[in-house]
Length: 112
Figure 1 (cartoon, rainbow, N blue to C red):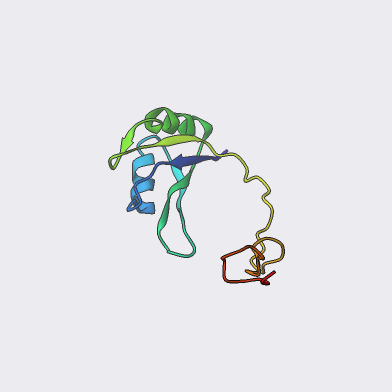
Figure 2: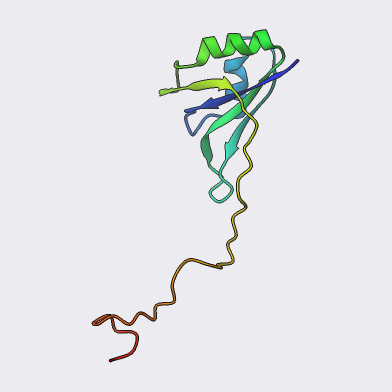
């Protein structure tokens, strides 16, 4: 059964092909993906590699965790399921302020 690995500390210029090639030294790679920032389109410096077997996954962890790759030290471990996070609401709502403070000398508010 395939096992998904988290790979952190990737150099930002690493391609998915380079990641796949590096991990194939440990065994059969089912997939390799690098997580990209939606806004900038640049790598976030981490990704996931799915190894074909549990044995290949353990071999990859032993081979790459704490090792240097492209000048950076990798963190490789078994990927955990993504935790449920609260959905971000960009419509405003609570938070922020109106800028109508009543303090002295701030140029706003009432003059008491």
